[in-house]
Amino acid sequence: MTESGQKQKAQLPPAVEFRFAESNLHRTVFISGAMGGITPLGLIQASFFSEHAPTPDVVKYALLPTGQLGSEVSRQGPTAMVRDIEVSIVMTLDTARNIQTWISNVVRELETMQAAAAAAARPVGK
Image 1 (spheres, rainbow, N blue to C red):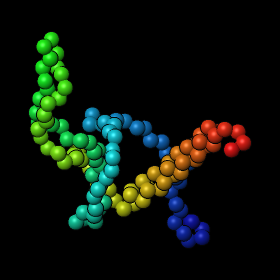
Image 2: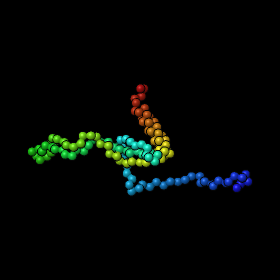
Image 3: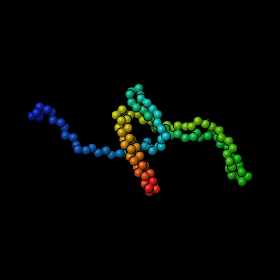
């Protein structure tokens, strides 16, 4: 105890340094959207997906007299659009709030850059 009767607090360093390393499973993916919700344990789950047209099972082409492929004759397979789930994440509420703040700041920064670029591209006097 100090003279004032309070416990002395441990001295904290002025800064902390983090080194980033990519795991063997790291990859960069394009996403079209996300869906998810709250887990039974009260965590937030989000699945990020990319959307694309379905890959056909079979495509038939006409064969030209030269042996080259001609135009498409028929296509068989699924017709519904596909949402490939690229990655799912589970996070705490605090982590979600931190990500929300970070992404809001990045969106504002990008909107500012796009507005400046659009203004610079406008003809003078308009």
